Amino acid sequence: MRELSPRPRRRNGQSLVEFALIAPFMLLLLLGGAQVGVLIYDDISVGTAAREGARIGTENPVKSGIFSGPAPQTLSPACSQSSTNVVCVAIFNAATKGSTFNLLDPAQVTAVVTSGTPYQTAGSCSLSGAAATLPNDGLITVKVSYPAPIFVPLVGNFFGDSGNPGQRTLSQTVTMRIEPCTVTQGN
Image (cartoon, rainbow, N blue to C red; front, top):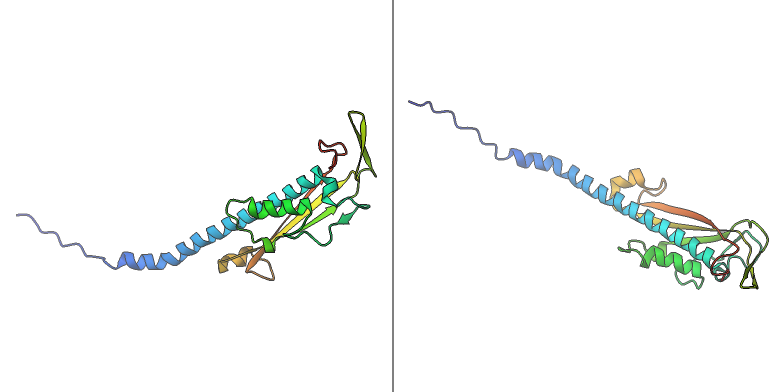
Protein backbone atom coordinates (compact mmCIF):
# COMPACT_ATOMS: atom_id res chain seq x y z
CA MET A 1 0.00 0.00 0.00
CA ARG A 2 1.11 3.46 -0.79
CA GLU A 3 1.78 5.99 1.93
CA LEU A 4 -0.29 9.08 1.83
CA SER A 5 1.81 12.20 1.99
CA PRO A 6 0.55 15.02 4.07
CA ARG A 7 -1.37 17.62 2.15
CA PRO A 8 0.74 20.73 1.45
CA ARG A 9 -0.20 23.78 3.43
CA ARG A 10 -1.88 26.50 1.47
CA ARG A 11 -0.46 30.00 1.57
CA ASN A 12 -3.21 32.01 -0.05
CA GLY A 13 -2.45 35.36 1.59
CA GLN A 14 1.35 35.32 1.42
CA SER A 15 1.72 36.67 -2.13
CA LEU A 16 -0.84 39.39 -1.46
CA VAL A 17 1.07 40.56 1.62
CA GLU A 18 4.37 40.53 -0.30
CA PHE A 19 2.82 42.57 -3.10
CA ALA A 20 1.40 45.07 -0.61
CA LEU A 21 4.87 45.52 0.90
CA ILE A 22 6.69 45.93 -2.43
CA ALA A 23 4.11 47.94 -4.43
CA PRO A 24 4.85 51.40 -2.93
CA PHE A 25 8.57 51.04 -3.62
CA MET A 26 7.96 49.85 -7.17
CA LEU A 27 5.56 52.74 -7.80
CA LEU A 28 8.07 55.25 -6.43
CA LEU A 29 10.80 53.75 -8.58
CA LEU A 30 8.60 53.92 -11.68
CA LEU A 31 7.47 57.53 -11.08
CA GLY A 32 10.99 58.61 -10.11
CA GLY A 33 12.36 57.21 -13.38
CA ALA A 34 9.67 59.04 -15.32
CA GLN A 35 10.50 62.31 -13.50
CA VAL A 36 14.20 61.99 -14.24
CA GLY A 37 13.36 61.28 -17.88
CA VAL A 38 11.25 64.45 -18.07
CA LEU A 39 14.07 66.50 -16.53
CA ILE A 40 16.56 65.14 -19.07
CA TYR A 41 14.15 65.86 -21.93
CA ASP A 42 13.60 69.42 -20.66
CA ASP A 43 17.37 69.96 -20.38
CA ILE A 44 17.87 68.78 -23.95
CA SER A 45 15.08 71.13 -25.13
CA VAL A 46 16.69 74.08 -23.32
CA GLY A 47 20.09 73.27 -24.86
CA THR A 48 18.57 72.96 -28.33
CA ALA A 49 16.89 76.35 -27.95
CA ALA A 50 20.16 78.00 -26.88
CA ARG A 51 22.09 76.49 -29.80
CA GLU A 52 19.37 77.44 -32.29
CA GLY A 53 19.28 81.02 -31.01
CA ALA A 54 23.06 81.36 -31.24
CA ARG A 55 23.08 79.83 -34.73
CA ILE A 56 20.42 82.23 -35.99
CA GLY A 57 22.32 85.13 -34.39
CA THR A 58 25.55 84.22 -36.17
CA GLU A 59 23.77 83.79 -39.50
CA ASN A 60 21.80 87.06 -39.17
CA PRO A 61 23.88 89.45 -37.05
CA VAL A 62 22.23 92.55 -38.54
CA LYS A 63 18.67 91.31 -37.99
CA SER A 64 19.46 90.14 -34.47
CA GLY A 65 19.79 93.75 -33.32
CA ILE A 66 22.48 92.83 -30.84
CA PHE A 67 25.34 94.46 -32.71
CA SER A 68 23.83 97.92 -33.13
CA GLY A 69 26.26 99.48 -30.66
CA PRO A 70 29.61 98.79 -29.06
CA ALA A 71 30.05 95.38 -27.47
CA PRO A 72 29.26 93.98 -24.97
CA GLN A 73 25.53 94.57 -25.16
CA THR A 74 22.40 92.73 -24.01
CA LEU A 75 19.01 92.69 -25.67
CA SER A 76 16.81 94.80 -23.47
CA PRO A 77 14.40 93.64 -22.30
CA ALA A 78 15.27 89.95 -22.42
CA CYS A 79 13.59 87.82 -25.07
CA SER A 80 9.91 87.06 -24.76
CA GLN A 81 7.52 84.83 -26.66
CA SER A 82 6.11 87.75 -28.65
CA SER A 83 9.47 89.32 -29.53
CA THR A 84 10.14 90.61 -33.04
CA ASN A 85 13.84 89.74 -32.82
CA VAL A 86 14.82 86.78 -35.06
CA VAL A 87 17.04 85.27 -32.36
CA CYS A 88 14.26 85.35 -29.76
CA VAL A 89 11.76 83.85 -32.20
CA ALA A 90 14.20 81.02 -32.99
CA ILE A 91 14.73 80.33 -29.28
CA PHE A 92 11.04 80.06 -28.50
CA ASN A 93 10.27 78.02 -31.61
CA ALA A 94 13.02 75.54 -30.77
CA ALA A 95 12.03 75.34 -27.10
CA THR A 96 8.30 74.91 -27.53
CA LYS A 97 6.97 74.45 -31.06
CA GLY A 98 9.82 72.42 -32.50
CA SER A 99 9.79 69.74 -29.84
CA THR A 100 7.84 66.53 -30.20
CA PHE A 101 6.09 66.51 -26.84
CA ASN A 102 5.96 70.28 -26.08
CA LEU A 103 6.76 69.79 -22.40
CA LEU A 104 8.14 73.31 -21.92
CA ASP A 105 5.76 76.08 -20.94
CA PRO A 106 6.56 79.08 -23.20
CA ALA A 107 5.60 81.52 -20.46
CA GLN A 108 8.33 80.07 -18.22
CA VAL A 109 11.19 80.08 -20.75
CA THR A 110 13.59 83.01 -20.32
CA ALA A 111 16.34 83.90 -22.76
CA VAL A 112 19.08 86.52 -22.68
CA VAL A 113 21.14 87.32 -25.77
CA THR A 114 24.44 89.13 -25.28
CA SER A 115 27.15 90.29 -27.66
CA GLY A 116 30.66 89.55 -26.53
CA THR A 117 33.89 91.40 -26.93
CA PRO A 118 34.58 91.77 -30.64
CA TYR A 119 37.61 90.18 -32.24
CA GLN A 120 37.99 93.30 -34.33
CA THR A 121 36.05 96.54 -34.50
CA ALA A 122 34.56 96.02 -37.95
CA GLY A 123 34.65 93.46 -40.68
CA SER A 124 34.39 93.88 -44.40
CA CYS A 125 33.92 91.36 -47.18
CA SER A 126 34.10 91.43 -50.90
CA LEU A 127 31.63 89.43 -52.95
CA SER A 128 31.99 89.80 -56.72
CA GLY A 129 33.80 93.06 -56.31
CA ALA A 130 31.14 94.64 -54.06
CA ALA A 131 32.30 95.43 -50.54
CA ALA A 132 29.93 94.97 -47.63
CA THR A 133 30.47 96.40 -44.18
CA LEU A 134 29.46 93.99 -41.49
CA PRO A 135 28.64 94.60 -37.84
CA ASN A 136 31.20 94.07 -35.13
CA ASP A 137 32.95 90.78 -35.72
CA GLY A 138 32.50 89.17 -32.35
CA LEU A 139 30.71 86.74 -30.14
CA ILE A 140 27.07 86.15 -29.47
CA THR A 141 26.05 84.45 -26.24
CA VAL A 142 22.60 82.99 -25.70
CA LYS A 143 21.48 81.84 -22.26
CA VAL A 144 18.16 79.99 -21.96
CA SER A 145 16.66 79.09 -18.56
CA TYR A 146 13.59 77.10 -17.60
CA PRO A 147 12.18 76.17 -14.16
CA ALA A 148 11.21 72.52 -14.71
CA PRO A 149 8.51 71.35 -12.29
CA ILE A 150 9.11 68.22 -10.24
CA PHE A 151 5.96 66.20 -9.67
CA VAL A 152 7.45 63.37 -7.56
CA PRO A 153 8.12 64.74 -4.04
CA LEU A 154 11.00 62.45 -3.09
CA VAL A 155 12.79 63.10 -6.39
CA GLY A 156 12.65 66.82 -5.56
CA ASN A 157 14.83 66.18 -2.52
CA PHE A 158 17.61 64.91 -4.79
CA PHE A 159 17.18 66.91 -8.01
CA GLY A 160 15.26 70.05 -6.94
CA ASP A 161 16.69 73.50 -6.35
CA SER A 162 18.02 74.07 -2.85
CA GLY A 163 15.41 76.68 -1.96
CA ASN A 164 12.54 75.10 -3.87
CA PRO A 165 12.48 71.29 -4.12
CA GLY A 166 9.37 71.49 -6.32
CA GLN A 167 11.37 72.66 -9.33
CA ARG A 168 14.77 72.37 -10.97
CA THR A 169 16.09 75.38 -12.84
CA LEU A 170 17.66 74.22 -16.08
CA SER A 171 20.02 76.60 -17.84
CA GLN A 172 22.18 76.35 -20.94
CA THR A 173 24.60 78.94 -22.31
CA VAL A 174 25.98 78.84 -25.85
CA THR A 175 28.60 81.21 -27.27
CA MET A 176 29.37 81.35 -30.99
CA ARG A 177 31.68 83.53 -33.03
CA ILE A 178 30.28 85.57 -35.87
CA GLU A 179 32.46 85.14 -38.91
CA PRO A 180 33.08 88.38 -40.80
CA CYS A 181 32.43 86.84 -44.21
CA THR A 182 29.50 84.52 -43.80
CA VAL A 183 27.40 83.20 -46.65
CA THR A 184 24.59 85.58 -45.71
CA GLN A 185 26.98 88.56 -45.74
CA GLY A 186 25.83 89.59 -42.28
CA ASN A 187 22.17 89.96 -43.18
